[in-house]
Image (cartoon, rainbow, N blue to C red; front, top):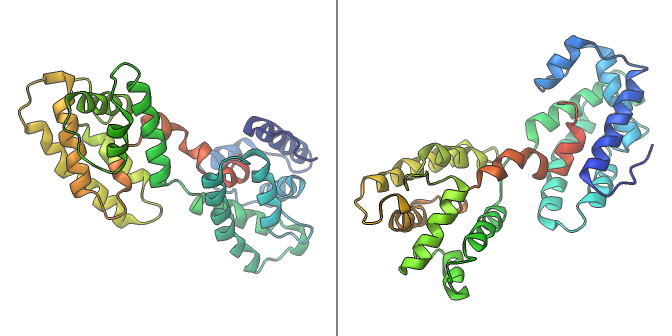
Length: 283
């Protein structure tokens, strides 16, 4: 079976079809499904060989029973041809898992043991972190949506992108609108520290220090809620304070200056890595 669809849904549908076909040879038991949903490979030959069957049919494993980096790259290029940022992240992810080909296995070209290693690698190393560029892009979409009626000119928008704290009332209110849409500011016009913690987790990229630093910044910036403002729940003045605090206290990579929209967090496991979507479909 080959992948001809150009969308993620087409690929996922064909992937499921291959799982169904392979399960006729290697049956899936209810207990196996429970473990797979927990991202744990069942310790039995049928499940390991099921994944080897699927990986080979999908072109993700070659005839030698090894992870095919070229095969996975070809698949992702088919449905991410116009998304170089995510494509690059996907390639790095697959390269990280290529090391499974160096591991000793007992079943040679059958690939069952190595399929289990591939599965584990996709769970351990699938990139859940967001890049600064992705955060900027998503947040600026909210800014532009909020700017429909505010009349803030392009010069002011460019200043925000350069981390310049706004001074004009209209720009502050534009920022408040975007913060509320991103759920970093609640309906009372206050900074939501729980969201700040979630952003820190999303940005860790395997580095726990980034989580610690991100949460420290959230702990500092939540203090803006204690400041007196004249516009109450509207949040314009406090939005400028939040922006100023994140600019002054964000880690050196500045990634957490850009609040992660909650809707982006909910779909990050789907969009961050095409490799993850293909190799972890059963997770």
